[in-house]
Image (cartoon, rainbow over all chains, first blue to last red; front, top):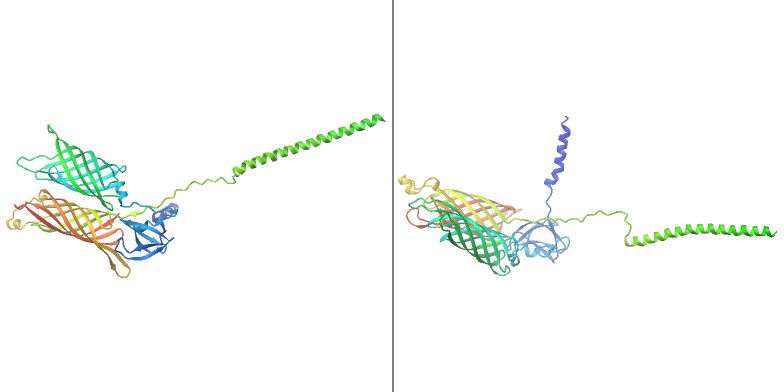
Length: 248
Length: 234
C-alpha cells in the first residue's frame, strides 16, 4: 500500500501529460476579404464548388497540397480552396496571408531545387539527378549523382560543387559550375579481367536554365571533368546533359 | 510717573516684538509649508510628464507564433505485383516509390523494384542454365515525370467520397539483369485513390524497355509490370 502514492503520482503525471500528447493541433486562421471564398470538393480545378465563406468569415487552414489548401469553416465545413483565392485572405492582425508560390519570382529566388537529366558521359549514356541548396538568388551548393551505361564500361558518379547563376531573373539564365567528385568505373569483361576503380574528379562547367511554368524549368549543362587516375596522365571526360527540374 | 509710562511702553514694544517674532515664527512655518507646497507643485509638474506609477507593468511583448501549414506534397510507398520479363516468364515483383507533387497536374517519381527471373523455354527443354542465381535478379530503378488526368471522386455510400485520378508516367533509369546494367526507358499509367489526405492506394501498369543481346540477337525487350501499392503523403 505504500507504493500507492507513487502510483497516484504516476497517474497524475500521465493525466497532466495527456492533454499535451493528445492536444488538438493549432491551425492557421485566415479571414476572407473578398466578397466570398469558394470551397471545392477536391484539390483540383475540375472539382465543383459546394460551399462559400462570406467576407469577414474565417477559415482554419488544415493542410496544403500543391496549389490547393484544405480549410475548415467556422461551421465545420471542410473543403479545398485554390492558391489564387487564398491570396484574398488576411491573418488575424490584418496582414495579407502570404505563402510560397511557384511562379517567376520563385524561379528567380528560391531555397531548393531538384531535377533529373539524361545525357552523355564520356560517350556512355547518362542518367542523373541533382539537388541544390541556394544561399541567395545567384549562388547555390549542388550535389548530383549519376549512372553511366556504356559499351566499354558502366559506372556511377557523384559530384559536389558550387553553381553561380547570372541574371537569375531572366527566363533564360546562364550559370557556371565548379566542383569536385568521385567516379566509380566498372569496365566490362574482355579477354583480361579488368579491375573496378574509384577515382576523384574535379570539374568546371556551365549551362543554361529556362523557366517553363509554375515550378518547372528546363536545364541543360556541360561539365568538363578531370579524373585523377593512378596512371601517368589524368583523364578528361566530357559530360553533356539535359533535363527537367523544379524549385521549392 | 514718567518712568512708569516708559516701562509700560517698553513692555508694549517688547510684547509687540515678541508677537512679531511669533508671527515671524509662524510665517516661517508657513514658508516651510509653502516651500513644501512649492516642492510638491514642482514634483507634481514633473509627475505630469511622468505619471505616478501605481503598478509597474512587467509585461513582455508576446511573440505570436503563427501555426505552420503542413504540406502533403511528398509521397512514399511500397508496391507489389507481377513482372513479365521477356523470355523469362512472369514473376512477383516488389519495390518502393518516392514522389514529389509539383503541381496538381505533374509529379516527379523515383521507383525501385526487384524481381527474380524464371527459366526460358530453352533452359526448360535443354536443362541448361543460361544465368547464375544472382544474375536472375531483375533490379531496376527509374526517375520519371507523371501527369495526372481525369481527376474525380469515388463514392462509398452516401457519406464517404474519396478523390482519385488517373496518371501517365514516363521516365528513364537502369535495369540490372543477367550480369549487366542497361539503360531503360519506362512508361505506363495508373490509378490513384485517396481514402484520406495522407494515404493513397495505387494500381499501375508500366513497361520497362531496354536493349538486350542476352539471347544472341540485339533487340528491344519489353518487360511489363502490373502492381498494386500503398503510399503515404508527408
